[in-house]
Image (cartoon, rainbow, N blue to C red; front, side):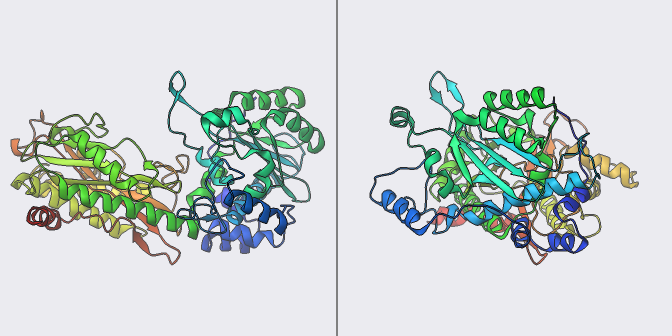
Length: 538
């Protein structure tokens, strides 16, 4: 059976990741990966380091084409992955640190309840997390595979149908095991090479690796040996065989399955220096792509063409693909917040709202810009755009200040400010003066939150409350918008059918400074108009 833990307070999770006051203070000033490396100096681990001969044989085999692995390496793809990196931007040791940190956190959390946790006195813990499954659009035609973010965060493994097993015993020793698809020449002829368990230990830095076919019997043995608490996210599992195995363990040993996503998400929330660099790069790629698309926009183009253009320009800068289906909304389509049909032609005098981002190295950007199709704002468009540009600027300046110490505070303050600005331009009655009244009016014109966490997923770490105090290492968006339906009768006609949103990606860096990762993406109104003029003279 599955036990659903209540939403865990962040303070409790942080306490689990640092059992002493000194450790907790270190955690707030270091990234999770750095903190884990500190902790490993006092914790016994048994990670196997491949011998020089083994590493040399693997490298030689890859260079000579005698061996192919299931994902790029620094040998096969030196233009993407540097030496010592397992995947673009992240070294193998960081993945090992994450695994150790997670298991130590689970153990510390359980021990904070005293002699018994979850109705049992066990001191050992076993965590199972599966990879994403391959998905098909029809028959044998697959979608582009994207790895489970949590699995990727802990392993760096890009292959489907794999499973990570982590255990920590009473002494605090952490063991990691990968289960992977075995080598299969016939399957690899059709779908490409597999790493196989033979090379998984050395490639991914785990202690052991076995064929996925042995998963069930191996887990049964570990449960008998350790009698551990079992951690498994039943609702998030994409692999039926893994789910069935875990449910079977519950029936035989009577432990309850404990969800682990809160712990993983709280680790992912605070970016390491390597992750910060990846966020800078994915945001830079999308920003430059946006600038080019904005400069090339002309009446008569279709929303679909601009969709293709932003996709192309991101990929040409080594992005894997767009991070989500983009919103490319011309004219009144921009008043539909999640408009993704992208089929209409662009007309003169219209605004074009584009919400798009890309994925690079497993990390995503998320930008929204709104600009005039013909290169010049109308008077009504200019009034609303200047208002939203100023509003977003003030929202960014509020970050980590009173009224902006959490994403929820930022949202409430922005709604109030929007209400005030709407009142100034005559779209909200002058008789309103109360904070709640003006905030409510602001929300009617911007009926969505103005921030969400960002990272490996676009709406990253969704179970972390937005009332969590902002701190170094966090990345999030700031995206106020205004949407005025063309059928509204309570606003002047010239404002109807206009939708505007301005969105930037924000990092609170290691020095506690607010860093706008998408600052190079043009948004100032005069600069937007000027980029069209420059393009026309080329």
